[in-house]
Length: 118
Image (tube, rainbow, N blue to C red; front, top):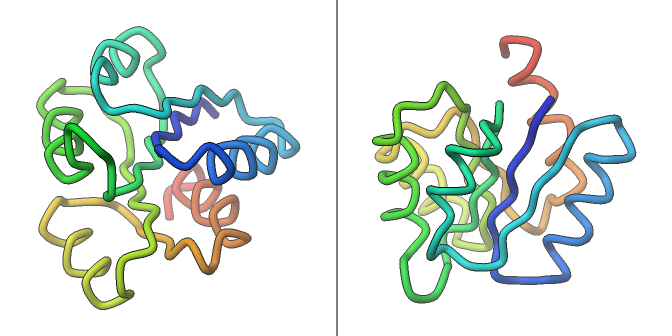
């Protein structure tokens, strides 16, 4: 599966990408929001993992732009927002799933569940 991870936290990017690659996924990472829609169009991910707290262009706005690009990619919000706020944003943005950064170990399982239609 092709997974794009967008997060301004380089450590979070590294950990998430290593975990997903270890399970055989093709992973592309972005540490900034600006220019990401071009990467989405060229990489054509199956899943986009997106941190909501991004500088310059917020994660929520970026999620809207990615969805407007018309690609058939699942959206997973990955953030350290309060869990209730994260759940509300996921619902508002039409994300298929969300993972709180305190539960980073769950990210691979969530991404794989989406691949299996869950």
